[in-house]
Image: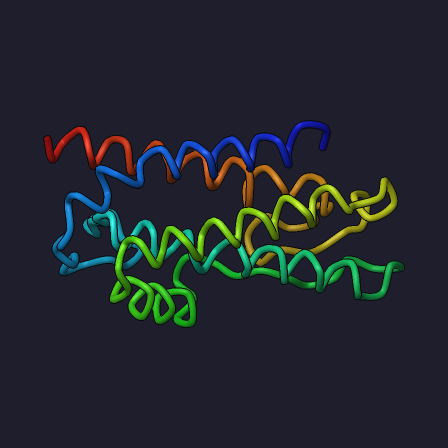
Length: 164
């Protein structure tokens, strides 16, 4: 887990670096299809809406694993088709880009503090994800937080490059 919080903070800083072009592009059109299918197309509002909801979601879910019975894998998480995920993206994409970026900043701070606060024993705690199966809290940081945010920053860079 060494470096995961730093990577998350760096991805948050990279997202802050995109603030000016993201705000300048307002009002971004809302995507007709922002679901989970290959045909779906996310614009800046959908990406930012997802990032805004996913950071606290995964911190809370990993907290569920830490709070659960340590003698067995603790069920946690969701899949892309989860309706509450899509509902939250639908609501968050209605917010201004500035508000979303401010909320994401707070989410990055909270997620990095969560990672920083994990003990070695915490990192070894085992959760059971619906598709990934048994995975430790420490091994969950990459796909659900650090790498996940980095991928969405790259996605936003590509969107901005295509809109220029």
